Image 1: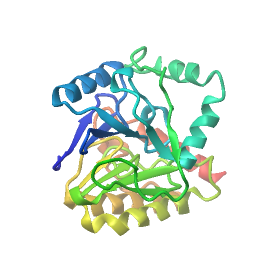
Image 2: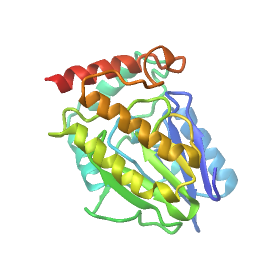
Image 3: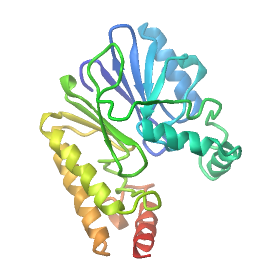
Image 4: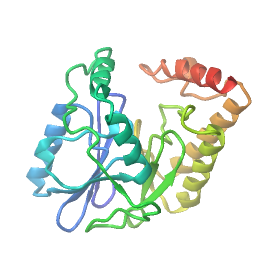
Length: 265
């Protein structure tokens, strides 16, 4: 999608894995969901002769913390707060079992490898970029959606990897239990992304379609309009919810209603 930047979209909730080519190998961001996808990714990288030299998880949700042994033992990073959250989650011996049980209700039951889940190293607080031998990848940390969430800006390629924000299929999903003011945290994160939007040609959401330069500000504005509507307790005119939602994504309306109820309390 840009020089030295590739993306693979999973069939499961349009999850996006991003590969950034460096000098000695690749940086792998949010690598995928099912074992077969991760295995396919390993095959593709082997054919390219490009080993994984670093990994990065944008935030501490299970679908962004997966790995495959064929991807190798390169360091896998996250922000300090992201890594601390993962450690806390995995300190519960039943965490992986609960994820597996949750997946039984989906079309990928039994297909997700959890053995290497969440084995990430937290970068020191205030780290500005991912330490690796490749294009500079700036870390834009914020408190929207999940603790220690990070967007990644690959400025020389004009690419913004947004994590679970700026999606064309998912509404903003707030961290309503982990912060005192989830609305303001989300608005603050959008301001951070808006601050770099002028130099972005391509935006990659954690779930959904890759967008071009015309989509970057449009998605920021759409997410802001939704969050402001949520703050005011009303249903926005948003194509991602209600009858206008894309086929298969109707459940997003239930998420919206749930967020309204939680914020009301």
